[in-house]
Length: 377
Image (cartoon, rainbow, N blue to C red; front, side, top):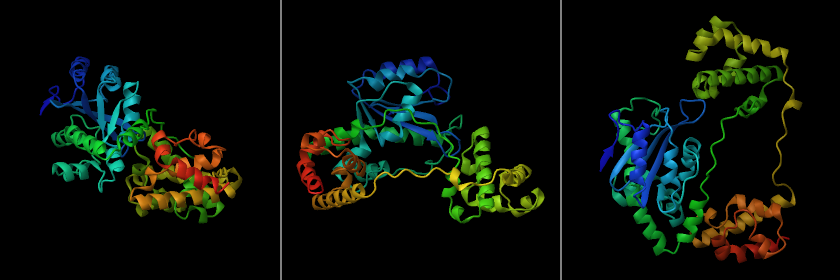
């Protein structure tokens, strides 16, 4: 296949995007992928959009200051199937950057799960069906780099280059096994909402190993260091673990000597650069003592009789899945069983209106579920 690109390797101008859109509108199917960065940045960034047709591979630079809304035309066109792998990972970020929605979708990962294939990851599918070995070297590469290194450029093209071939294979397999309706229901559940920005939870430090064993004084020091780390990460647009890994938070928070002693004891870059600020933060924590009453109590989701019903329904679901030799989520998901217990439907018709009770599930498993649920009422 040839690659359509500007001299820099990435499509980063409005006229290039418009020309690509015109070519895409002539297609019946296109393969789409995206590369995000959450390993280096504070907020997850959409760094690359890959699109392949049967005639070309194109890489788009969403970090460039250009309007990408023209891509809504092929992304929303009902006559163009968009093939993605694990679409939930990519679609929200595409929608956030481009607007609109993406559909109709064929998700090769979801299709493989419905088919019960032993390997549903893209690398496994390409190896099993096309005898293509995927290089995983760049899975944690920095996709913010510009210009994009040639090896990363080639790797990114490979993520979509073979998806159309996989689509043809999996589509035929779904039809052969009568699983098209189930697969379509799975594709339609793809999350089309823009991702929520990362939000700081001021109480999450208590989830660190051994944090709850600390004294109130020590918890206050840890609390304030935890908040300081997040604030610095936000300012520098760095991932929080790159500012200071979780494993160092408690030792650093409890260190009681001065900045120079701290730098001698901890060789981490952040401590070397910010030892004075860290000492100031932990020392001033005593001015705002830890109060257990300030920690919000977790809200129970299911309890008592509800939890008992859920567990019995889950056992029934797992047994049915085992008898059919399929994954349990293909019968009913835990989420749909919880919704059922909370909704307390009083008829089979009402059961069909519960979240997650899709038409294909009801036709296959609805009557058996109703019988099991009714025995628990």
